[in-house]
Length: 423
Image (spheres, rainbow, N blue to C red):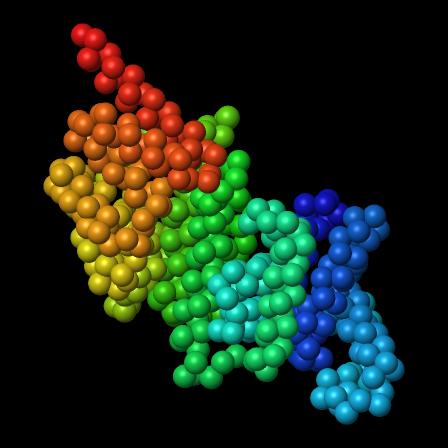
């Protein structure tokens, strides 16, 4: 397994387990995470040239452990007279394992523990995202900065501040108590959901999708599901990701332009992901307890099971959005329900719901509110108003593929309206 892409995939899979082992030994998140990143970079260079060692996991643990030990010895030498040396808990005479040594048996559960640590409530949502991708996803600072379109130095500062905040909060590398777990798990799932959404429809930039983020979100959610197989919302989120990502091959044309759901070639959808997603959501709904991720997955399953756009069971989707609104006050849910209402009850019903969001204010200035309004006005036959709304939406989005699509719809409708006026 010496190909570059294979090495990168292996390193990303091993990264959280390696960090977990080193953290259990030395308990200093900032130092351990830096050491693991250095070990991953060293492996990326050496393994391509010399091949993957017999025990890649043991190799990474050994290298990272030596880095932490070296740093701790250096710190101890510099700060020998300070009372705080004892509090830092340096490893002292601890000997790093050899490259072939195997990790302790309990290391298999460390990814979930890491996720909880990276989603610590002391961190801002942006820091939770960045730290999760770095420590658990195995992405480099440069890759994360590129994904979120910020300078690498800015992202490095964000990650550094997050690690310092975790240290200051006194966070331990351990699973939260039963009383804390459900609240913390909600944060973990929300972070994974945000990572997936940013990858599926990038908030800005030249590309509609960032596949590296959707892949990481699915991989990490699958890992959580393996550790919590009976948790309905974990299964629901994984099903939602699989069913949504299954459309990815059909969402853009060869030139990168956006293809809306109704116009996609469903033969290009990933059938294996759809089968897995449908099976997951069917099984978890049968257990009785329902949450918002499960409902979103059920909606995605209805779309996935329609062979053609015109076969979509919009009445069922409308009912599911009604249930979803009982769980969340998210205006995006209401906006999606407006589309479903228009498909079932006519465009006027959808536009009435959109008007309630105008008064709500939480989506003020958001391009999707104007894009949905434009779509419903187009359904209602008001081409001039629809064209104007599409243009407003195009000015407000920071995604270039979305902007081009919206501008194209506006121009086509404006041209059609002009032609009818002339005749």
